Image 1 (spheres, rainbow, N blue to C red):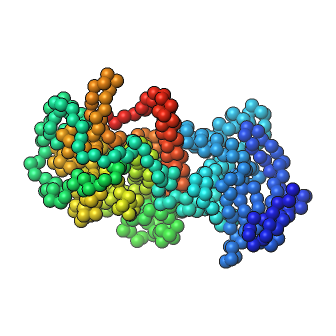
Image 2 (cartoon, rainbow, N blue to C red):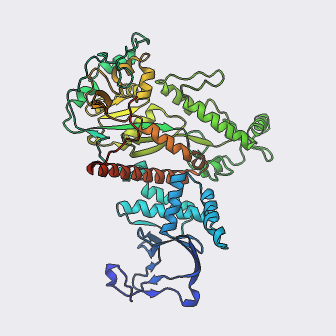
Image 3 (cartoon, rainbow, N blue to C red):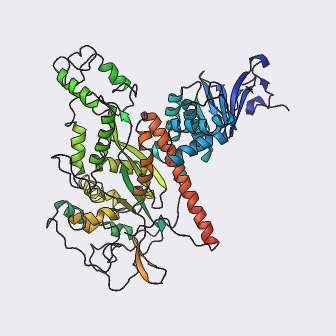
Amino acid sequence: MVMACPTLTCNKHSLTQELHEQDTSQVTLLQGSQCFENVPVLAGHCSICRTLYWADHERFTQDNGDDVCLYLNDAKYLKVGKSVWVDHLVSRAIVNTNYSFHASTAAITEFWHFSFVQPSRGTFKLSHCQVWKAFVAESICHMASIDNRKIVFKSNLSINALVAAAYAELGDGGIVCSAVGHSCDECCHAFKDVMGVIPRQPDDPAAVVGHNENHVVPDYEGPALDPDAMEVEKNPAGPVGLGNIAADVRMVVIDGIVMGPHHCAMQGCVKALLNAQTEVFCEEREEAMAGRCWMKNCDQDKIGDTQACQEHQPQWARFCRQYANTLLLGIQQMLRRAQKERQPWLPCAGEEEALEHDDLEEQENEEVSGTKYNNYFSASRFYCVETLCAPYGVVIAWHKFAKAEGVAKILQFFEDIYSNTHFCPSYIAIDKGCALLKHIVKQGHWHAWEPTTWIIVDSYHYINHQTTDHLCQTWCNPAPLNGDAPNLVMVANNKQGNPYYKRAFNTQACEQLNAWIGGFQTVLNQMTVNNFDFTMHVLLFLHTEHVIAKQKERQRKQAAGIEVVAESEDEG
């Protein structure tokens, strides 16, 4: 058998073996559950274009003289260590174990050793670094193969540089390409002008499906007049804009989960740390702060092995006492999450009062100003991961927010994703919908939003705002019972044939996604920024694929006449 170079200009020139037999590398190959030692690795060489053909990549020199590698999406074997290769069965198993069991590389390494090495009395031990490389390599091949991308990286990249380059190439700015083009009856409905009517239901515009049927709507208890609400009322309302749309009605859901990696402690900088284990600054800030006291607004030199000048030694000593114990760090992390998320059932910490749900700009300004922290003794952490989902659970995009989950950042995130207003959804469901609507009007963006999109809050938060917030009650009802928004409510029949109102869209999709993402929080929070970005994108990419596959299976069963029981419904 003769192998030929596929480069057109080489005219199918035959390949020769790159190395002599005595110089051929002997490696360990993991193939399924089997381990093979002293396996030769061969490479083909084209003497015309000088391309090297390896099992998992092609190496060639560009016109500018740079050596680059073209990763092969259909490679049968992947190199995961200096002398270790695995087949796709192994690499896929590693990715699936991480996805399904929320497992770290250390946990997967231990599982592999106990499951395959010990029973066979083998001597080879798979390291956690090799597991991580297998995860990265398999993920690159899988994501690139979806739209047949040809991924080229510089030759001989370190694993850290490879991860950063892979996310830059495949991350698409946080847009999950496996969700592109998704459409289903859970996320998209035909436009309708009139809602189906069930007799003897409340006619109050504040009444909401799933909460107020056959019940008296609570009286409004908030301020008699909300100036911000009146500003919105002077503008054309969302339903008017939607009435001009003849196409299908779509919804997206936005929410965030408090988690994220450490980043540079310098105010306003969110770059990755120079060393995630020992440093608190990025490379640029580390050079600027070399030898200086780490208290804010202090230009004195630090003394000895401390990070503070003579004047600020008491603050440094206090910091060391508070943060020396790793157990305390874990407790503080849990307290931080509980305090930041400000769940309604959690008490306020100390004398600090919880901010109102629509007072998020004040919260963001406080966080950005840095008034709570007067030193750089510890690295900052990204505040949350914001996700944008379709109601069925398909993840459209994600982004990290530093400092706070402010409405200005949410607006920018959405406008980045939907830069072309032609593709904007009909509805946005978000727990801060009333605050976001208020911010859009204040910033003069309403004229761009009014023709296409109506902002509502999700059902859980609306019930809490229903009697206290005039703007929320008037404009952000996720499923009005009185027919004001016929595209948000549908009439369905239960098993007894009795009609009932049902929300047309699942506004809790992001909450359900966050419950799943939360299982990875412990592992992800310990990663560097680049590793976090890559891993989060891979997980959401895979999750979207699984959700779509599950839906196709459901549709197949329905077409075959097999009864399908819904896993979750947003009915209150």
